[in-house]
Length: 304
Image (cartoon, rainbow, N blue to C red; front, side):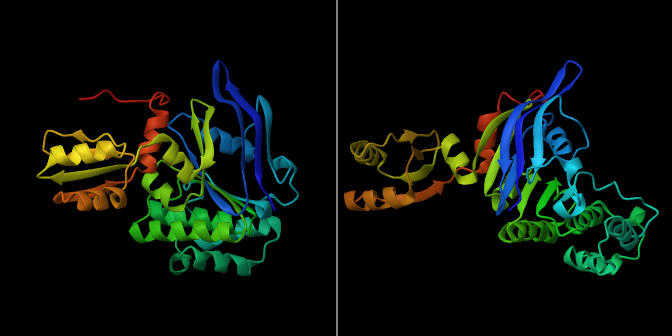
């Protein structure tokens, strides 16, 4: 099984340290979300893994070898870093056939990935006429052309319509189920939460987190219940006896941290306290991400 292994990776551009001593692995059989603010070093790290830039120090390997030493790199690693890379004067099929010919991939594989990515019907059109979403699909087709064990995608949902977003979500899950190592860089927290099993989070070139998605969310956020009742005093007293600390709001509602609806509802029922509203507020990946990276963003706008 093939993995990406990054060890003490550092990249400096003059006085700027874009990547600062990174160590992490992207394991087969799961989708790893690659997160961080703009300028955090995600794109630089992906370029270093793909041999498009040389590290100042440290290593980045695929299956134990640097990318440039792989015998058949397109069969080992499929990558999409820039959907605009394909020549606009070529057709989609022509672009893929040129790539396939360079590494001895049969032409039949071109038609397979065109079908897989949903652009077979426009395979004869010039790439320059494609929308951003169609270019994304073509870029993903290019990444899948060699049937690689490792797939690296930078913002693959960019430009896709709702159907396309659902499609890429299922594609990523399927690649992981097939035993591939999948690394996906994205700024869409809500979408990343739907497909990522694991997260690697960067901030200013440094590693901030390397953990499971659910563990990441639970470690940085608080689950709470919001409720409304005509007998707030009685309810607050009953909750405090159970170890909760209910907090009243100006609109007459209450919030209870570290609680579940399944805990609060039965408690109120046993006490005979009427409940007018009871809702759980589950924390999201976005909540956890913002909590972790609050001081790590290099580019931020002032509040209006």
